[in-house]
Structures are given as C-alpha cells and as structure tokens.
Image 1: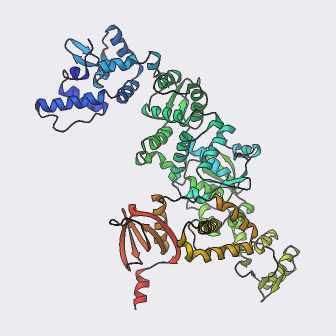
Image 2 (image 1 turned 90 degrees about the vertical axis):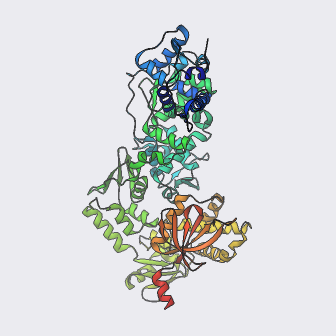
Image 3 (image 1 turned 120 degrees about the vertical axis):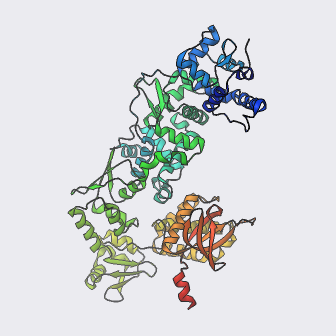
Length: 637
C-alpha cells in the first residue's frame, strides 16, 4: 500500500529531516526543535513543499539517469537501490524509510507514472565529449555588428542589410559565419535602438551604446532573443524559447541528450520540438550560449549561457557580475609602423568602438585588426572627436606611438583650424593673410562670394555651405560646436533633441516649454540658414525620436550627476520628496555622490543638501556653471 509523505517522514530521524531540507532547499519553521509540536510543524511544512507539483517535477528531472532508473525499478519490481544511489535518493527525500525497508511517497509514485522511461533518460553518460565552448561568443558577435555598422551600411525596405552589406559584416569576421545569424543579431540590436536608420542606411548610434554598461547590450539582446517575434528566422515561438532556457538553467552543469530532453519538456509544455532542435539549439550553439557534441545529440549550458539566463530569468544582476569582468577591462594595444592596430577582441566594447571611430576595422577574431589613415582620422575629427581625444585613445599608457603615426597626427594638428568658420555670423577666418587671399581665388569657393573684412577674416555672402565647401577644397576647418557643453560630444544629437522638444511644444503636450521655445526655434532657424541638408535631416528624424516618458535609468542618472560634479555644472533634477505626493523640479549643483545619496547645493534653498538617489526620477544637464564654495565666498564678499 502506498504511503503519504507525512507517514514516511514520521520514520525519519532528525538528521535525515535536516539533510532533506538542505538538499531540497525547504524552509524550516521556527521552534521546530521544541518537542513533538515543533517536529509536527516541521513535518507539515515539509509535506506542503515536497508535494508541490513544480518542486517535485524539478527534483525528479534534476536526477541523473542512474538514480531515475533505480527509482523507477524500485517502484516496478521492488528492487532496492544500494550504495551512492540509495544515499542520494534518501537525502533528497525521494526514497524514505518505512518499517522493514524503504518506501516511495504516493505523490512521488504518481509523478513518476506520468512519464515514460524515455522522458527520464535525457541525462547523458559521463563519457560524452562536447565541443570546446566559444567564450563570450554572443556578446562578442553583437559587438562585431556594432563595429561593422559604425560607418553605416545600406539596408533594404524590410530593414535588414542588403546582400553586399551582409558580405561586409561577415568579411574578416570569425565570430559570425552565417548570414541568417548576422541578420538576426542585426535585428536584435536595431530593436534595442542601438542602430540608427536614415535614408536607407543604418549606423551605430554611439551615444546610445556608450550610455549603457558593456554587459547591458548582450543581456538586453538576449531578452529580445527570447521575447520577440522571430518568425522570419523560422524560430520556435517565444514561449518555447523562454521555456527551454528556463529548464536549461535549472539543469546547468548537466549534459543532456537532446531528443529525450525535448520529449520530457513536451510533457510539460506543447513545445515545437522540431524547430527547437533544428533551428534554435544550433543558433545558441553558434553563439556560445550552449555547447554540443559533434553528432548534435547532446547539449549543455555554457558559463556565458548561464550568466545570460540567470540575469534574464532570475533578475539577479549582482549574481553574475564576476562573469562580465573581462568586458570591463582595456586590453593592450599594439600599433605597427604600418599604422596597423592590434588589440584583443575580448575587452570593453566601448573601447573597441572608440578605436574603430579612428580607423577601418579589417578582421575580428581573437584579435581585432584595424588600419589607421589620414582619411579615418579626418572622419573622426568630423564626428566631433578632438585631436587630444584621438591621442588619448591611441596612447593609453600601454602603447607606443610609432613615428609615422606621430607625423600624421602632427600634420593634422598643423592643418586643423587653418580656416575657421563662424557659423552664427557667416565669417571665415584664415590663419594667414596669404591663405585668406587664396580662399577668395579658389574656384571651388566661388559660390560663397567671399569678401575681405580684414587681412585674415572673410565674409561669406553667397548661399553655399562654407564648412562643407572648404572641406571639399582640401582644407581642414576647425569643427564647429553648436553647444559649448555636451555629455557625448555629438552635437547633431543635441540638435535633434532640440527639434524633439519643439515637436512636443508644437503638439501642445507640454505648455511648460514656453520659456525655451524661442531658443529652440532660433537654433533650428540658424541650422536651416547655414546647413539646409542638416535641417532636413533633423526634420526626418524628429518622428523617429522616442517621446515616451518613464523614469530615467539609475545608472544614467548617476553618470550625469558625476559628470556635473566633475565639471561644476548645474543640473535640473526631478525629485520625489519623502512626504510629497508629486515630484518637484530642483536646480542643484552636484558636489559628490556618497553611497546612496547625492550631496549638492540646492539653488531653491540656497544651501547644501543631500538627496536620496532612489528618489531622483530624472536629471537634465544644464549649460550653466554651478555653485562652488569659492564662488560663493567671493560673491558674498
């Protein structure tokens, strides 16, 4: 006769009960050692958790093949297991003592009867040899897409790269070998907002990438992989992908036979086993999330897959920090006299993107190979990277700048700013009077109708774009900056932000923007007068900007506050005081972040105050110098 859990547990010693609770991670009630009443409370608690369906199913599924077969054989033929198997089953509470021998609780027997032998034989034998895993392959493959898109690639109407550009993504890329993998990773990054579309081309939106931690890209792309509709790639439904990763995480460290394992999962969920086996699992294997054998019959979760699944399924960000340490370091950089740049692929992707801004990426494998030239450095200067920043990225304390590169940088430094364009007043300033005379005579600049104001200053009276025409004529104008302060150095992005604010204002969504409306419209008017192409680009991008609200990410808030404190800038914070029912706008000068608090000078109360970081909903950097004790003392005096 089958006995209940309570009846069988009653025959266990206190030590046996304690081992079962430890192995099955069961909660132990207080005062369980207080005589018979305490023991009864413990038994009832154990019965409640041991008979819970999910807990019981997972306990059985986590067993290795030998233990499962021994338990099934005991139920069928009464043959008691021995040695290690007996001890393992007893410690897990699946085999419990009874008068005259051992017994299996009725609920355990019912759970075993629900599955056939094949469903319980998915644990592989120890001698199965799996292929060597590819460390961090998923994260590095995503980085390779961002690096390839840095200069922009052409896309089709469906939003995916054209055939030629797919070849560009795959060329010299040892991390991705199949076109369908490249397009899938491209789609995941695009849906995250890290790739920017315009006029049939897509490029990497660097400010969006740099605003997040290096691990964020891989973790959010993995979430998209499990959540999004991927019918275009013949992937199984999202619920199947999520369900599979959940069970793989529960069996981390185990080698599983694919076919029996999928048969077992089908008893729990209507899984599309064929597409999972032929499409999803091979993709996870190519991405280094899973590792498989040469016959594609066995599978196991890699440490990279464990970290991604652990973060996504358990929402435990801190528990996986150690795994992402290699993506937070700067590896050594070697620059050859041929201006070829070599650095390991496994490092901080932000650093790789910064280097790729200055060069052309040629190959990506264990090492990244780039090539620097005058054209690549001029392109970086046009993107707003200063010469000092270029030197800092190339000479980070561990690399030696070869003489040809020093000469190239020196030549650019001499030429940069030989002409300077004052965008607001349509003036062109030359370094020498001889150069000013040459500018007036150059046929490429005829449309500007340059007229001398002084020996080195010329006035542009024609309709042409002075900055663009000077560059086309082979000069290197000093890059103009529309705003004196910016967090990411991308002035165009700030203009698009201004256009976005104007869009909100025009739609009547926020009447509080009246004080800044004239400034915004004035900036846009100047852009329209000086660079009609940029103005049209802004108009095209405004509808694409995300206008949704929501709290600002905590790490982004902290980065802006740290930036403001470092450069003594005023910020406008949206703060929720403890006793208030609505948020308040405060103008503050951040001084320092101390633990969970921000110490700042509050311009409303005219004194230093502390603000809890968790109550700062959002923060906006203002282009104003902040308060300092020195300024305050001099002002008071």
